[in-house]
Length: 73
Image (tube, helix red, strand yellow):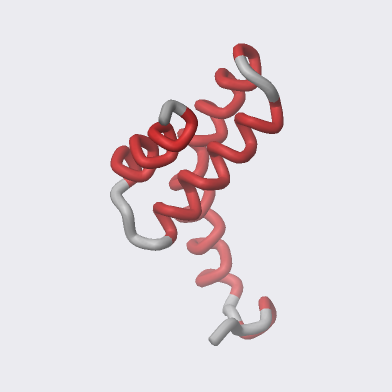
């Protein structure tokens, strides 16, 4: 069940923010590099898909390999 934002205390909210940004930052950076070679649409979809799979419990590099396989199959 999702809880409203205000249900989180400030310290817990800051910790959640920090953890979330730490997980997504490498994929944001990867997406920025990919956007220079491919398209912004592709880069955003790839970064979003990887981070979604991470959220589902896949290890980050496994998630990345799975998503990369979608574009190269």
